[in-house]
Length: 205
Image 1: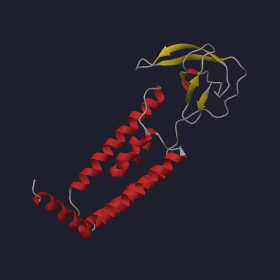
Image 2: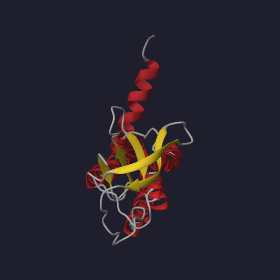
Image 3: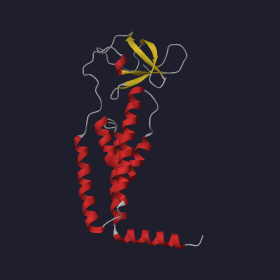
Image 4: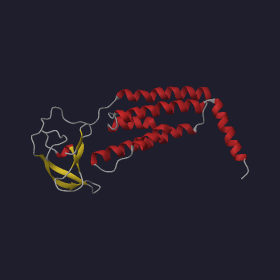
């Protein structure tokens, strides 16, 4: 084994003869072993649904570690759900106080749907070893208002809930989005936006 990501249950094997690395999933190993970097194995080469190479029926050659705790998907973080009703309370308060444009609601719903689908697709890709969605492409729709759907996707698909660096970036984008929501919903900024839009419409072509 050249690389192994224990919390996600997959890694890559470098053949003893020259050739590209081959994807290996935890399900291809015997249940009594836990893969680790440096483990020597034999395997049969197969293909996933996308036609990409993957190792099947993997048998360790070196003494193996006894599996003390079976691999499982990333755990759910139920506390993350609390961010959604908390933001809903803020949004209702802002809506009553300042009455922001109604299209903002559709923006959040649309971006949330995109985020939810993105986490589902990326989770499936991680399991099958196929092409992954870049993390920046998961974070950007969340910053634009889709983070409630991202939270649902993370918890339902158990995806991206353990990687610390990504979690910091994600929650930073959530905080930034809420701040921008409050700022852009405020009457002075709304008036400035309307004035700028009217000026642009009146500008000579």
